Length: 342
Image (cartoon, rainbow, N blue to C red; front, side, top):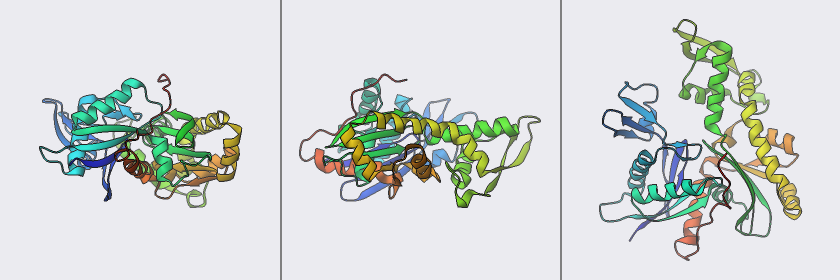
């Protein structure tokens, strides 16, 4: 009998959910590769620990970029490792899986996910749009004739959708999310302090003192960071404040705000009234950024709340979809008609 699992294949992290067990795996979407032989050295957390610390012969890479597959072979290898780790598959049994994908992917990108999953050991593959899974995992009434609005800020994409009667009515997908936040911090420090820092340092800055809107706990917050001076090439320390980090993130956050506004403009009036009553729910790792709910409330005038356990909403929603699709024969809820990738 095939095992049944759902996978949130994210740019930053991959999570797996097994029916009857809940979330069984949570790993960074990183692979360490030996460039001389193209052999995979490590996958997941061990590979992430190697970023910026490997010799020239070993490169730690993220095979997904902006929520979609950038390197097919490495993604398939990574998926194979994660599926076997999660489902504990033997040589002769395979898994039925549901994979979450961004709502704005092209047909080619959709097929790449399906093919990589089959190559990784899946028997049957079904796809579900990330905002639909996020809304389900956040406990929104997606099956009712009521408008529910969700903003899922992941590592590579931010997905905004209005959902009613198990269908996506209006949506926007922008390839600006957690990773772009990190890049913005790196570029800001490079420009202002002539200091080069790595991705892990930028992520630590974001987690420690990052905010989208002034908050009490970041009012006077500051953090000392280490990097390499671009002036003399030597190691150097600088202290960066929460206000500076907020300035660094402002452009990226504005793109997400505009996506929310664009989705609201495309929403039918009756569903807009529901959203005014019930508000916007934020999920994904970006929901943990301090003050983001307050920023969205100020920019849209809508009530905004952060989902409980926002990091797990997508994979939990996909897990709920397992019950609907793999036993009743219903198709997984897919993304709406495709837009050309911008």
